[in-house]
Length: 447
Image (cartoon, one colour):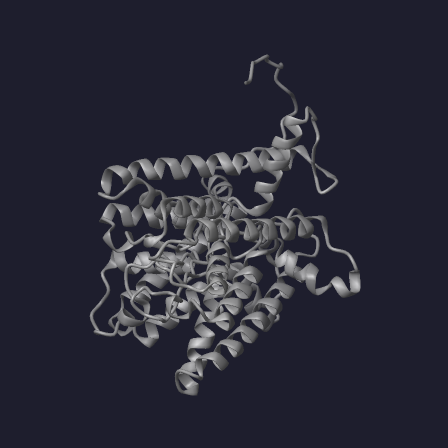
């Protein structure tokens, strides 16, 4: 019986990924439950420990407990390690240890890596993982150094270094955790160009995807970006600019957020909020004080999320681009979906539609359930659900007021959002192979 269970668990790469992330969350919750993890020395309640562990492993950043006020140094390091494991993926980190141990990766390991990195083939997967580790650690190291320089103006060197490492790892992995206290995020740096630009750079680099990072690093030798990288960069730039302009217009006269700021600070704050909605969870203004129109615009940006193979969530920029191109093709009466001058294969269009529809179904169902169990405004619940599912971590202020059922549902949403709805579907079932026949075509009227 045990052999059959183990065989089922390891039957497919999606299942291995699902089990691996669940195991990390369980271990993280156990460590955060220990009295040594809290400032008071009291054990953290199990549900709270699982919530924090899930939020860290799924690089979301939603918190019911103040990171620096509640957790000890040990607890904060546990959170940071969980963010690193969740951002880069446990298989990627496992590959790092395998390299150090001199062990060759089996075909099974490579298949799981292929699923984790969202790649279409096994070709060059190990080489890509090596580059991912190098790029990620180098970017985090540079970010930590730059943050340390800034924090040294406020604290002694050791604490500045500690803060620098924590925020660099958290922001690059789109984790959204910070050590500023009282759930303030970066509110104290709303007019600091250095901190804002550095945070934006780390979030963007973590959100474009490791394949794109690899292409950009090798651009000097290859002299050409891949089609995937071009789509990701164009769509990411478009969404960042669109989000910045939209948030700036909606909040320009809001005295609770942008109103008291200078024009330059308003643009900077709008840019950070726009980038952050793509999965980072970093903010310099009170999200709960934003206008309804702004919050809803941020919900839409969160739904799109980051890019494939990145540390972020959402339906991904490429799926959004393919859907937009498919709509444009339909409006022009064309059968082929063309994006940046090249035709997108039908299987990719179907995948984008599937991911989007599954995501919408999950979000809508969750919002309806929480609208019954939680005594909160509809838009606030929608914002919380989308933030959890897209692993963003921004909150309009209801995370700490969630019921026990609401906490469990948010944990599930973060877990599904980090792995992706298709991966979860494949993990629970099995991929059906290619059929040897086609059903007869039926006629149906659309529109």
